[in-house]
Length: 611
Image 1 (cartoon, helix red, strand yellow):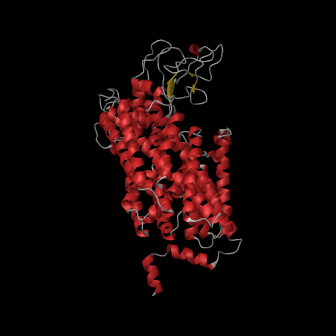
Image 2 (spheres, rainbow, N blue to C red):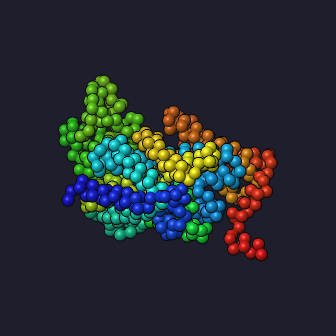
Image 3 (cartoon, rainbow, N blue to C red):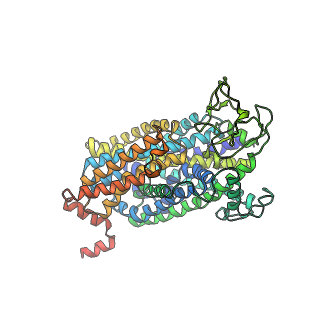
């Protein structure tokens, strides 16, 4: 059975499973659509939470960051995992005790203001659509390679699949679909990881891969040296910065880590998962289960990324070309080249592949075109042109060091092919990557539809609508959200993990402060919360738009803080503004302050006080 047939089989069976679960668990009420009826078992909810949170960024892109950035990727690893601990221990139990459907619900009631609720809905929309762009992009990449369609068509296929189980099943359908998706994605991630680590080091546990020594069969020159030592030596020889040392400033790394931590703790689609269990105790247990399920993948990522980079270099660097139109690259390279996510440009005309530091294509990614014209050179099997080449340009006279373009988002998906693993492993990875992307996309779509139908319509604009009308509005909002998210998937601001990091920054700057202050500070009032959210959201959004869409120069960065890390600065401004405004305006009503006390008092202690 060939790779294509195996891929169709694995992906097709997984789709059939997801849609079957959605039909079986179709939501029949708003409570089932919003919070799955509030009766999900903690272990099942922990598994669903892990799938919801471990998106395409975790499955597809995080190991790619580790592959190419090395130490600089530590901010992503620490930020995303550390933030979940903050959410699980500091916020989730209290929000569950509050007992509402959504984050805007909490903010609207805690700050006794429909204005605050509406601003929270706006924050949800910005965060979720930014986040979902990364998921749709990841889905498009998988379909592009394994189903032999364009990335754009891959995004459209993903939209159709999400429509079935997000719109029909609501949170009830999504929850049980995500349980299945977690099982698929974790199996699809760990099985290839075990193969990779065994092949390179002889160890069976991926978690020990970085410290293990490279086997002679991989490369006699590297034999007997630890993986990290070999990577340090190799990448420096190629002109890259030391793998185990950072190239980012310490301040920027700190702000990225802080933004991802606070953003994780403020993500609306993750927070809502803790409303689906029966009690506060179950919310705590659910958080513990989820953390354990998440750790399985995150402790595997470093070895997958590092060994993937080692295999990549060992496979392509120095390969001899054959003529001007074709290169003797391995088959995996030719397979991925068809997607436009990897390419070779013989810029000095020596028919030899040079993979090193620097951009092989000015402006980043190569452009796909059917017009060779006088401006381009043919790159291997694809009509991709180097946008820097101009009439009269003689590539043989240019001492370019790097001739290979590699999109970092392909690393996890390409790893099994690079390592020549069995074809069923390659197909399994495809199914797992799609599960990771679609599970998070569904959760985000539900959050968007709930914010619009419940928080904006039912609680603010049209309070007279009945439950049936509200459910119809939720499903209509889901459909609209799918089309908008598809657009952002077709036009993402960056690679998957960076796009997702921007969403975390928006969550850190807008939601995290008002949730923390809403639980632990009785004195924060509606004026302070509204002002803080607006300052945090607008400043962070403006910073992202300027540098990601308007071409802001690196020298314009404030204190060298990248857009992925600015959310931490926006968060600080949110806290400061909220406190200043709250303490210069009247205190919240007594019943609101009593409600805050009630949220924090354990149920047993509360009963004892009553007696």
